[in-house]
Image 1: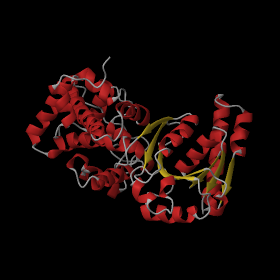
Image 2: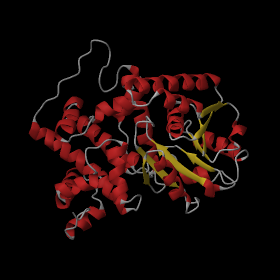
Image 3: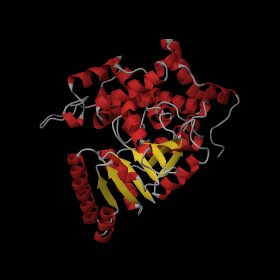
Length: 386
């Protein structure tokens, strides 16, 4: 099949590489010749490294490069079977591009957005044929991250989600289906990993290094929340949090923090700026955590209770299936276990008690227990039967 990609930035280039590696003909569109040239050169470097590592051979490298055509006029998408947009997170900009795109593609071409936080339904509404529109959300870096979220809009043709799932699975990805809800699965559920950790820091319970240590050493997470925010970029992470918060009608579970807002305002964006929650400048030493296992366990239990509660609510509102929620969190953000399976291991009643303790302490809606968890505890049910 022929796949179009709108945008030759990091994400667009990554999606193009994935499709081209799966032997699709790929057409990458960008209005900037500089961006196109940078993308072409960067891809050649990446593929050369893969050859050096023995991941692919020289023949495969040339095949991938030959599968990609770069264009600067949108009209060249006329033979595409699927076009995926990967440009700036601005719905008006995206809609303008989609309206123009629809003039040039065939009537049965699938049009998709890689948005991580905007409404798929709202984007679809700008098209003459919204039934052809769907969300296909890759994670960065697209060639390495196994997870892809597929999100049908209200208007999407009923058969399209499974058709797209089959295509993307054929590209070697683990595909999950999600309802068109702010943040979809990963960016909705993962808010607690960052937000509750910042809350613990702001309350003076522990510093960033200690919280990161507790989540890694005791919880088995590959990166602590503050390390991960610095890796993602505090500006990016804050913007996603703010977007989800507004989209959920200012639900306190997703409220952004002043700590991260101030870091973004100061330009302390993390690794990319040399400073964030930690100092990455040359010669700087990382702070040492306080390795008190009892206190560290309290930190882990609190953050994990919030994560499990959000995962349970995601299932409660039929945003995604049990298996897709757990797959999304293990494959999309590398959590050590699926959160719903983790809840079974901890005990559903224990999860309810931890949430109720937090609510009793703070009396904030942020800490309300999911009705699904409460019902399951009452009926002594588990998410998994085995």
